[in-house]
View 1: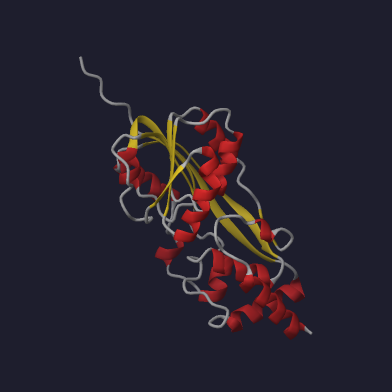
View 2: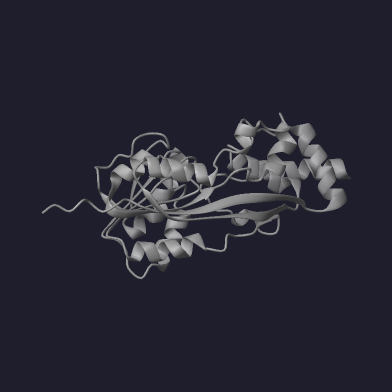
Length: 263
């Protein structure tokens, strides 16, 4: 019975499309506590005060769409970048109603905009922040407002598949290190908040879909390559209940200093 159930759940998790950042499929199959600051709602307020805004690594555009739908006014210019073609296509379709210019740009490539173009740059869960480029496209006095993934996020699950990871991997994405990098690029960090949050996986289908969708967690993940680990985790969930891990998030609010005043 458990073998048949394992195979059915794995097949279900492997069949779900992974494009975009819509996580509604996980309803009832996994849960994650949300940071107390409410990033998407806070972003709506920032957008309402901006004249030109850029969302970096926008995914399928879901978070920006949510924020724009709730903003009391929209910036005169709106742009977003995304490097994965299926997500870029989805973002262009979703954000078109807001007048957002969606530009295909690799995550580690220079941003395809002129210096000082935007008074707001935002991002939710960038793979890595390109601080010098963020600072370059910000106008003097402009802000970078973003939610980042922090260190050791969901590592209980990652290390179940990969084993103990080196210390340099466990401490990557450290918010204080990112603060130093932002300051080195010429930004002033106005506020930096961090939280660790409970994550639960209720069945192995949710684990399979999660690892297919968030591809950097277990690089090169396939059901076939990790079948023994999947089966062991399935049996653990069946016997003990939800598998518990912890995500790590931090909120960045940084500013590019105003231009020096000249007599």
